[in-house]
Amino acid sequence: EALIEAGAIRLRPILMTTFALVAGMMPVAIGVGEGGEFYSPMAVAIIGGVIVSTLLTLLVVPSFYDSIEIARERAALKYRARAALGNPAVAFAVTLGEGLLTILGIRFLYRATRWTFDMKPLEHPVERAKRLANFDVADSYSPRPAPWQRSRHGYTPTLREPQTKNPYAPRPIEAD
Image (cartoon, rainbow, N blue to C red; front, side, top):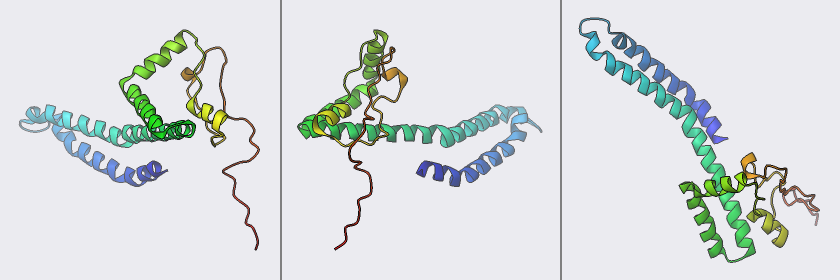
């Protein structure tokens, strides 16, 4: 929500600055006037750099930040699920190791290999904590949101079992 609001607020000043700089460098890039062909390549490079940096500022950086935020929230949920089953120090070490393997790309290779050979996905830590320790999870949570995280032949583990009590429902006010 903050990314969308900040993007809407900052969009106009960023675009105005970009258009002003591109419009100001256009005569130099075209090479008008005496010695214009000497500065033309520099002006083209400046215009290209400003356009690329504007696209990075408005599209790539917010998208990357949002994906990192989602990954952080999922890692925190995994840590809490693992800590509910056992030692929090071990849960932290396993979650940290999983994050490092993800950054290095080893975890992707492991998942791709399991998917290639059509092996059933391992039980997710949140699923295991829900099954063994009655760990509270939102109904909308999906442990494997991407198609490549699931088996190709229809096995889709789910947490969306009917709950007897919604932990996120508002509590009734008791009268004295």
